[in-house]
Length: 269
Ligand SMILES: [Ca+2]
Ligand SMILES: [Ca+2]
Image (tube, rainbow, N blue to C red; front, side):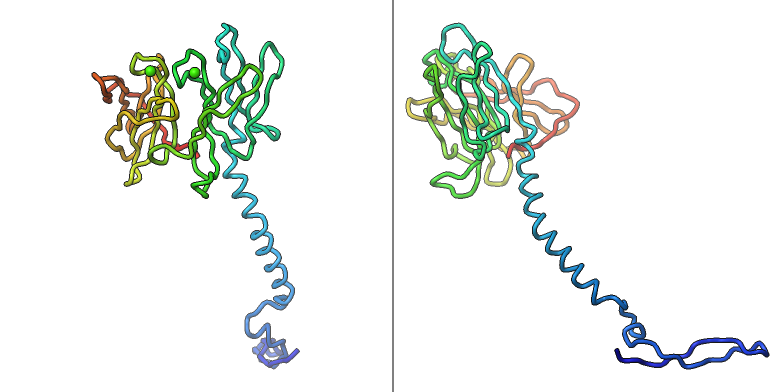
């Protein structure tokens, strides 16, 4: 190791300060850490660990909603007056389980589809409820993971796909089903993303082979889909403002409803 000289202070018998040259390693003179050669591998190891672990933690964060999602609802899927129990949970390979009289009769919906919402509604108006799932996945036409609406029928033993929608008229962040027009079949109400990044409500009805749009609300900078205590579809806005979705003639409108103290605005995945 190269060396350099500098002066070191001492005191002689007369109490005067003396300066003596001493030899010190060049690295110390330049202020570098004496063991920097050892620290460099440690730093590289730390960077490598971050590179390896960061995607893992990002993956966990993106699936956090699945870990906390557990939806259970009762629905008469066969129209026989007896309710089946539908449980959506991120456990095991499949996320949807259907039980009857305490017996598991069907399990399906791959967990990798990242199902985030479960509803049961009579979509087509035949008097029997369908199973509707919001999932977050890629599709043949849209390679990026996005929200999709999947409708399944039930044959008494298993669910079968009835309508697997790659997307609605625009990207959507939430949905609900409600009887709005008094005619057979529940209408689909979706909270969709406008071109400016805001939110709007869109009402659809079943047309035999899919959903057709009936009405679209104005855009709102921030909004969340909710339900009133009586099940009415509501739009929650900032500062506790709420609008109720109502039928008006052959169309729809949003009417002011009683405000609530606070609203949170967290999109579905
Ligand atoms: Ca039906
Ligand atoms: Ca209807």
